[in-house]
Image 1: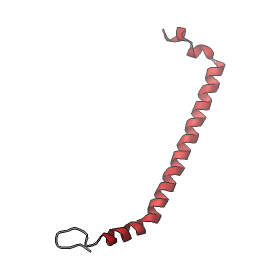
Image 2 (image 1 turned 60 degrees about the vertical axis):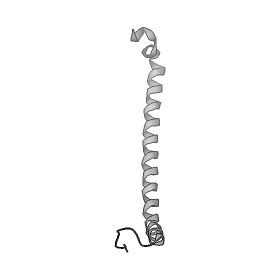
Image 3 (image 1 turned 180 degrees about the vertical axis):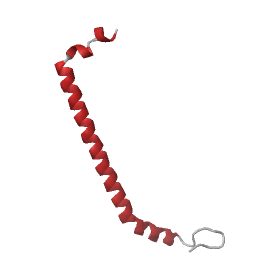
Image 4 (image 1 turned 90 degrees about the horizontal axis):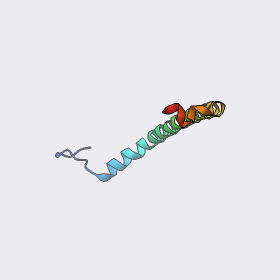
Length: 67
């Protein structure tokens, strides 16, 4: 549905196409949210491990260790 100049003939065509794409976009955003949640869970687990390590070995964070 393109005119001779190569531009869409009507704005409504574009709108119809975007309406068709909406379920796909919803699916993509859902999977992205799922992946982000997974990353957050992993990050939280790593942070929890780090906090337990630092509680067990407080000297690790003392400035004397670093300099």
